Length: 269
Image 1 (cartoon, one colour):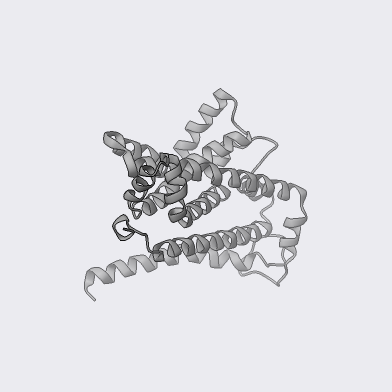
Image 2 (cartoon, helix red, strand yellow):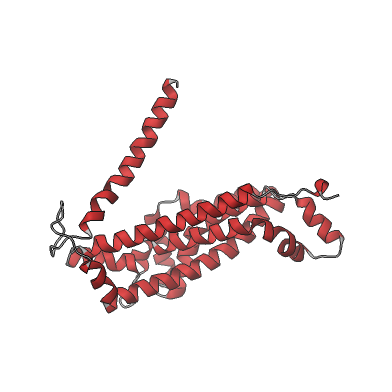
């Protein structure tokens, strides 16, 4: 093992420690018996989870976040799949510009994007509305959907669609009947990414939140300012668990897609 590999491994492990240590600290705090945050925690109880699920305002925020995340997953997957198909199959000279626009939400800081969306939505009356949340979160989720679906489309031989169209199928029918079944695991994986990005998004949500309807991350920020009880780490533990499960499911789907042997047209003759 050379020096460059050692440095790279050390950097990777340092990043993992930086990410995992806060989680390891906040996890036991969710089970503390005290009415305030303290580390190390004192006692052991599940009461804070019970208070979360029994509180009407927290449940309304959870339901609102779930509605936005589901709608975002659907919208970003449909739009992102169409955009990926255009990029892979026929972007032409404007492909690079189109791709740059799609990955823009990753490059642009979320604070800057949140301010821009807030100013625009205030003008058109979408600020604080369900539609506004869905549009904003779809913009944030699109790059991840495009990356995931494009990788799958690149592994599908376009000659399969050409063969279907030569038999009388339209371009859409060829995609729906031939290509979509082959890339379906990646499409579902992309939808899971869209869901988790929307469900956990705090920055843009903070700018777009209305007075009445608030998402779960916004409610958590408000509770931190007013109460700072162990209900916050309890919610954080739940969100972390959900995120981990979704990421595992997405990874399993991508693995299944990679293991699947993509047929080529010359092999089907």
